[in-house]
Length: 370
Image (tube, rainbow, N blue to C red; front, side):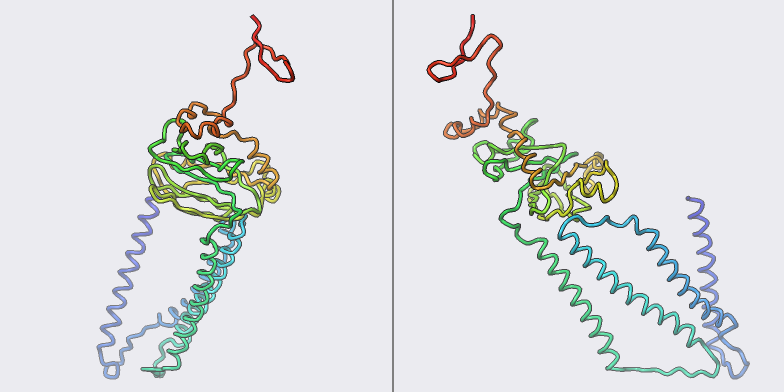
């Protein structure tokens, strides 16, 4: 590859020198008196250059169309969220307008170079000022740009608006080099507060157990579940350095900034199973990736996203155990006045094998057999 780059550099250098020499020769010729010595500053290459302009226009257009078609499989996949469809539509509308303007202006540019090539008897006509033309080429692009900007602003305002009150809340925390997920539990649908000073080997989220909303929160580090067709609010934060949440199919992209919580809400339109059937890939999974280089392990910051039907999502949530249930030692961090509420999430130890349960007066009692 280095040899090819070096060879191309040498070729371009030689061409540049030739063009400079040619320009200098033409410049000197223009300074001479053509009527006295019959010298023409334009040689026979003039017509060839004009034809080359048309050839470049045709070949360039064909090449651009070919490049677009070949690269199409590598474009972003079909959007699987409501706002993703809107942003994609806005993107392709903008690209269509830009492409149209590009081909029109360049086609005229290259055609004029051919059509009005130098001829000895041709006299150029100059327009030092034309207010009508200036108004046209100023007003028309201004109107087109205003429409594009307005539609983009409206779409962006919808995406960044306040999440609906019925949104499912999921907290995402980025750290070197994985994602931490926390859900607001099945009882109150409210996330508990957190404090980075409370982070330890088990409580990686820094959950505060003096907040009763934390008692039913459950967590995950392996995958994230969300329901289809229901608003989902991602509350995003970072523990150490800058990270970035990216869901390509859902068109979700938001930085995770230390000390500055961010958010993004969206509504998924296709479950994982539906996308597998559409792509005919039974092993397909949505992925949540980090798109901000955050260190040597950045490439490994991927998390499986599972989009469920609403009923399946509720069933999955009910199967999850609160963090306090799987880590009963943290009951000691709960204030005395709240321990009664927290205790219901602590699983009572099972009776030992040398015990049996008997019914006495309608009450179940554990009886130890000696």
